[in-house]
Amino acid sequence: MSTQTPEQKQSLIDCPTIALRDGTAHPAIGFGTYKVGFVPASASSVVATGDLTNEPQRTAEECVTDALNSGYRFLECAEFYGNEQEIGKAIKASGVPREDLFLCSKVWTTTIEKGDDAIRAQLDKTLESLGTDYVDLYLIHWPVPGKHVDAYKTVLDLKREGKVRNVGVSNYAVEDYKELLSAGITSEDKPVVNQIEINPFLYRKNTIDYFQSEGVVMQSYRSLRDGKAMENPTLISLGEKHNKSPAQILGRWCVQHGFVYVPKSVKIERMVENAQVFDFELSEEEMATLDALTTSDAFKTFFGLYKKCVNRDTSKDGSMDGVKTDITID
Image 1: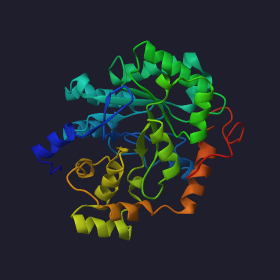
Image 2: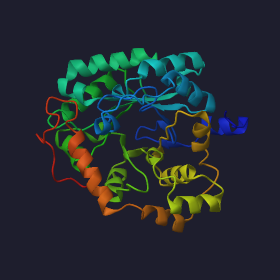
Image 3: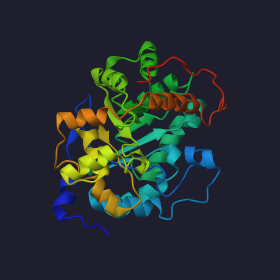
């Protein structure tokens, strides 16, 4: 059961925003829908264990209904997540006006590899599933070697056609972004967002500083590290000091740095808890302490994942064909 007050719900509905390059107000917090109601067959957890038996017990429709009822208005979706139709049902049943929602989706590697027609068909499927005629933000999910630049250009065309309001990228290294620019992407058409993993345990400051200097807003996924850091002594200590949970400390760190915070949970009480990050502040010293939790091993782990994922689910899956081996990892 949720113990959310009406004031807390309204505060989430009216959450702070971050201005995109064209002035669009991007909510500073959103609800992530990865593994909500559905676990993709090539999800890292499934690949590692071969186990599909621990599928979620609640549907995406139920979870997103709870998120919308709690006041979330930014929904982070993707082709890969396999649940956009369920999300669309929740949106329709909620009665929340389309103009009050901020809908983001991402096109997956398989579709990126297939090219223009496939990307167009996928966006149409996403729009039909979500019950809308446009998305506020459409992202290239991974910089598929030899394919992502053309895919980005297709999405720019879809923006000109009115089906996409803003265009961004996900999981792009500095070098992937520079590849876009060298292919003739103008300053007007540069990505407005780069969605990458950001939390105190993977804080790639040089990469983030570069993108922010380019006017690119950073969206954080795994903001809460999939719940795997809640026993960390630093988070517990700061939580006790501020009368907040470890998750709320992680979320506050994210928004205080100016990143879009995208927590995810299938439990309504956690959805409510995760959103209570705008009513307190961490000191400069506390922020610096959290900043310092990233280890060199974390950068190496990230690089290994990057090299594996840019070709994932494409005809070159499992190979290093075209994969950049010299990127900015920190």
